Length: 139
Image (tube, rainbow, N blue to C red):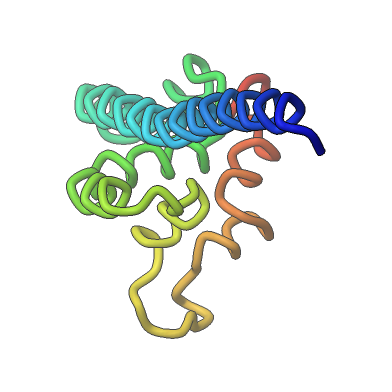
């Protein structure tokens, strides 16, 4: 490799590094933004639930929410555990949504039959559960 080829390669590698890091920052930011959307949805769902009279919530939810009952429960749980979730995602760029949900769904102990981890929700990972039960669009 001659000097000119090395300069072109270096420049290309520098450009690649910049683009790679830009995409990495966008990915990490989008995970945090996704969590914040889930937290906000949970906050709004909790507010709506609080305004429903006893026995009206599930009917209201089915009529007005595009996701499933289980998705609503996950969003409300995200809202209820928002401080813990934010602390964990703030300190770790490697914490996926599935791991974040796992952090708030199950304690640090090994899962038991009464203690579901994120990977056990609806028989799959929590994000998969949100997609599979219609939580990200249609019912």
